[in-house]
Length: 271
Image: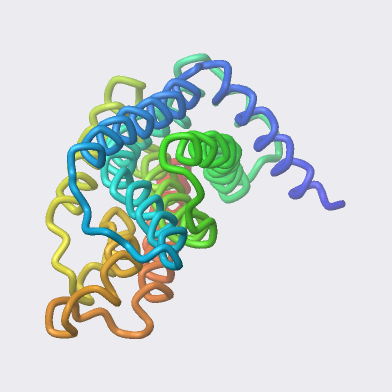
């Protein structure tokens, strides 16, 4: 294994441990689980007050599963909003804290390139998000099963795989990179707040068109999966490539910001 790969894995391992020791990521994941549970309980209470028409006996199981799936899906906006609000704040101090604790000076004395350093920081936050989300998805799946009964597992996993997890990685990665040049944690937190506000603005301004693809903060995948077969074609104008386009543009934005930050740090180092 090359020295760069060893350095990269070392940064990821160290930063991953620090993410959980600071408790910010853990608190956010617990908050997501609590929000999902609360939203589920509210949805459960609402279901109990609605009178549904009688369903033929041969369709009752299918209808019950469909209703359970919809009940779980309607909890998603709450989880997405909290995630896009909290993740930039948690991730924003990842690099400035090294200056705060004097770690940056130690790293500067080593043969560690800026590219490896930046990549290690972003990948470590992504690893923390992925580990946390797998645990939250598992627990939320069990809670949904208890509250609503059997549901369509494929739809549930699809939303995690192509909506919540990519959106979380987008918010965390951008939070790390946008605050990378800040001199202290307070300034970094302000950057995180600004980006969180942007993410929330994206969440609440979803248009149901191709323009939703400009940001993974927009719950376009959620809306597409939920309503593509339920509303007239004129209501939602999603192209067939909406989901790959959204994921691709999100990855491109993170890559572009990474290159800009890398260039800025190199320029600052040489100036």
